[in-house]
Length: 333
Image (cartoon, rainbow, N blue to C red):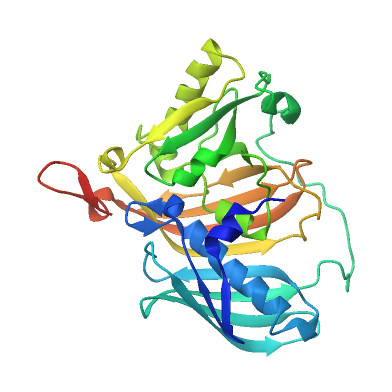
């Protein structure tokens, strides 16, 4: 299976507790990197540590990852220093401190496990998706550019997060009718599939819940995205709508989301065979005074959860992020 993301991360072990990682211009939102791509770097360092320095513990999988973002990361190399906090028989605890150019950017706590080894009970649950999901798409038809009755496709090409051009997203055919809920399927262009680092990144790849709740008509407003997709679907059924974005458009935004913390819980080791598609439900319980929660349930093609993510975000005046030069073009983020 191709792994463009891991190649872009380019993780290198410098000593038993120090790693370095690269970056790619595809991860950029102006002069800063997407937090999900930073999470993917940290995840990769944690997994590498569990399978090298701590290999004797026989806990190769990342179970949880809690990240605190002090400052935005920039398109520059990162150094990750790891501290072993507790080594246990069923789980280990480590701290990961990510810096760029000697400046602290992010701190994370990770725990390990071995998903192939049961050490306690198992019970099935029957918790439904509410509101109810539309029937799953016929993914073979979607990949053949044939229309699906319940989902409509799109791709995004632009200056913000250029890696989106390598992904296809499916929205419900009736849009996102429930305030606080956003549903979508996504896939990478072949031959890329999903691994653990991809799930860490995916935890931050979603339409803006705040823009959607407030119906800002901004480039990340899911209602606006749906409207464009629907127009294309009516004219050329099955063909992905091509969405675009630019720094100039982003500079016109009224609000901007800043992630303070991100929590990830991985539910199982991904199968050795290629996993192509994932389904994500994004849920926001409250946006109040600029403080917002974001919960993501990421599932496999059978709608079995594979990763749970939660973010605590501040929704701020976009003018604090984007400044314009005398020509009216976005110069700073």
